[in-house]
Length: 274
Image 1 (cartoon, rainbow, N blue to C red):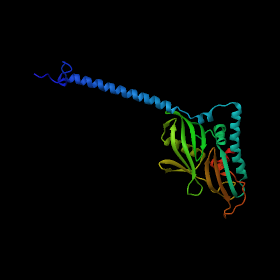
Image 2 (cartoon, helix red, strand yellow):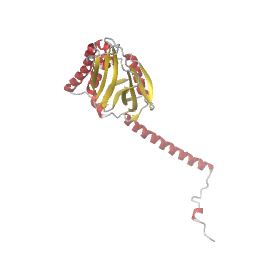
Image 3 (spheres, helix red, strand yellow):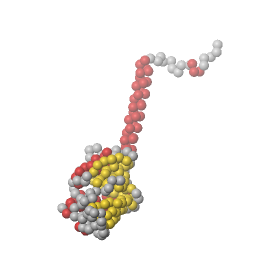
Image 4 (cartoon, rainbow, N blue to C red):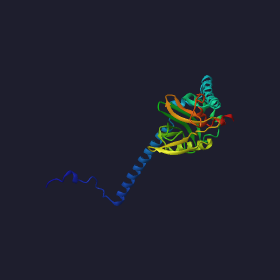
């Protein structure tokens, strides 16, 4: 008689019962759930560590520096504000104008003047806003601290003029909490609250799915003779360049002493006298 094939030999002499099968299933399910929980815990730790990541440029921008560096930041902020105030007072005649605002001036003002002079401008859970201005684009960063999150939010920002006269577009994209992608609704919520508190008229559109804040710059501004016409906005390495002209109601104009008045309007420079 031929010996039975090896695969026909039973592995165990114990009878296989329904209870045995159920127990094996329970053990398999428990092992799978434990593995799943372990993976989720590991992913949670990785996500938490990633959300705590802070880019070096932001750390440098908010770091408490030696007195000499702090003085430079204060002076940069004062220069930003001084330009807005002086040029607001100079905006009495018509003509071409242009302006350059540097990253250092903007960050200096944000660091040394924003909280002191406009403590209610930002939502209470937003702290330490800073910008990094690069060629053709910029990045804005700020810390959010509330019951749900404590992280530095970094979002890409594009500035450009639309086809409508004097309409500035601010496009937001690629928001992150550290290294973790973040819904752009978080950013638009902050922008909406800041616009409301500063009385900036803003409406929303979209560009390839990204939210775009549309800000209408008034042609007629208090203390400026004639109408403001914004002709160019450029984001350059380390600076933002603006240019345009102020014309009389009949379209004529001549002098060039109204530089940088647009930024004074955007920041509602009349409130800086308070």
